[in-house]
Image (cartoon, rainbow, N blue to C red; front, side, top):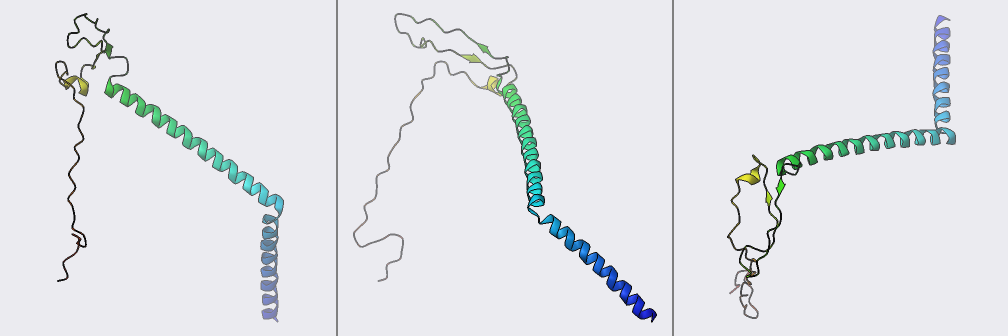
Length: 143
């Protein structure tokens, strides 16, 4: 008799648990609940994307500041006025503007290019080797 009451109580408890789980599943799968879940997910995704964009902008600003400091573009470079052209057309009077490198920057150690002549790189075509008809160079001769 005690056994029967015990198993009856276990069965009733299992039934109550199963019914509550089934009701939760039905509630989760209603159109209103599904649309609410989708809306919450979209809002969370939007927040994550916004945070990512903020992080990227912050990183870009930091990197730009580093590059400007390394290249001397943060106000330490001095722009020299253009040189006046002479009527005789002397070399070096092209009216170019030169930018001095900031002291201590890597560009300050480079030699100046005054007096050097710039040349355009030439493209040299290699002569093609002629192949004999019926012969290929990528496989062994079968004879």
